[in-house]
Length: 130
Image (cartoon, rainbow, N blue to C red; front, side):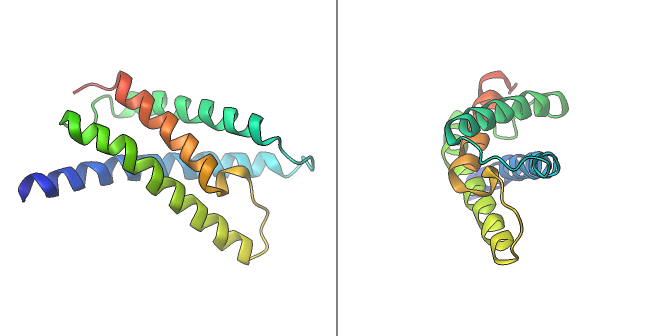
């Protein structure tokens, strides 16, 4: 039972870190989005968010060089669960903004938030310390 709570806490830590960085990127992108009226290309947006996610993962390793999750199985579970939860959270934020008639960016959709979080998680998994 203790292992379960430890794993849950570790995954929650990774999710919280990814959500925080996604929200910061979204705030920055939202401010840059206003001057441009052109509809973004979905392919370019996906590639861009993958790159932003990888950069966020690399940046997060400066602050937190060791992974929050100790076990290999927990890290693999985190690689699956955290991007999904992050995508759901950002899609919910996008729905909330849509109801308030606020301008949406691609990160307000599940797929793009998932891409961002997956790229971040992959970089942290590959280059993070134990």
